[in-house]
Image (cartoon, rainbow, N blue to C red; front, side):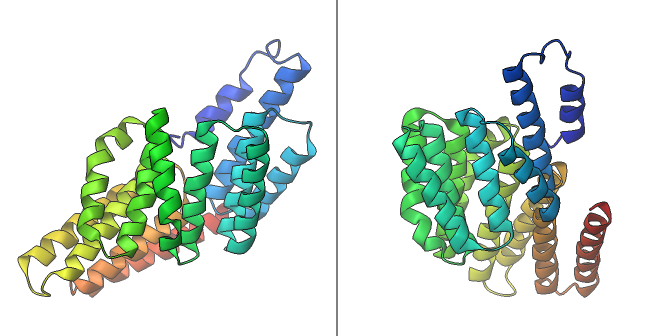
Length: 279
């Protein structure tokens, strides 16, 4: 995912109508357009619009298994963004049961396990997702599904950070970042840089308050926050951008620079305001 929604939608619109004359092809084209719009609305935090597109996708004709799975994953993402974590977990378990009955492929199983770990993290109990994140990483590694593997490793790193194992989290994430960037998936890169920033912030907290080591680690954290912000910006992820600005403001306060901290807070508000104006 490179965040080039306008280009993707334009290419879909420019498809030769003869190509999608058959009912099956037209249904696939309509569903793909809907998925693009749904993903974009979710990233823009336009949850009402996302709900509307989701209802249209569900009201349409029966989709093939891959598209149905994508719709279900985005539906769970919508619930997570509304912070209704118990419902999100229930929906995930229902989907896992259905896929188990249908003998889901490895990618889908890994995706669900990583999503489960993410829900535990968002609910404030990331340690509960440790075993499932490890299983996801192991399964993805054995099947050589690399993008899913990097996502699972990120989930493991998130748990390590919550356990204050910051050094281990840094080493783990740094070992996969070149491969993450090769995937050219802005969403994956954004979260990976965010995990690295969190780990370096944790390492800074373990150093002496006035030490050079603390300053260097905070500088590293700022670097990765900026890179994460850039990647979130490419996919128009409003929440991700705001989270990075909040983290940056926190570091500026720790560095004793209230002016820059206020600048970050102002940018945070500008992002929120611009998102509301576009709804």
